[in-house]
Image (tube, rainbow, N blue to C red):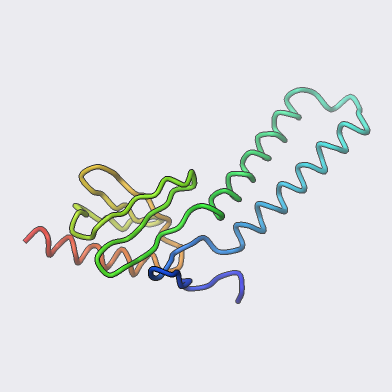
Length: 143
């Protein structure tokens, strides 16, 4: 299925990204909110007040955040390290030997280094394998 790939290849290694469904949901939601706001401005009635506009703008910001997450966030898995880029395009290079703890929870994988904590959605394709690899690596480092 084209909306959900296991892992994509990157020039440096395997990349973990959000599925394309995130992009389509963000775009569809943003279009819906924009059309509703325009219709509310063109055909005003007594139900539109500041709270309704604020609610629509809040949903618009939410959809922009979903689009930003799809466009910017990724992890590139390499042999001895991984590269993590946040939705605000801040990039970190983390060596597996620097990982102190890797906890696999119900919905996310938490990767802890001495400086940072990375929270990754467990349901993304390829994250479970990364979590298992990191847990085995942290066990080797603790011995």
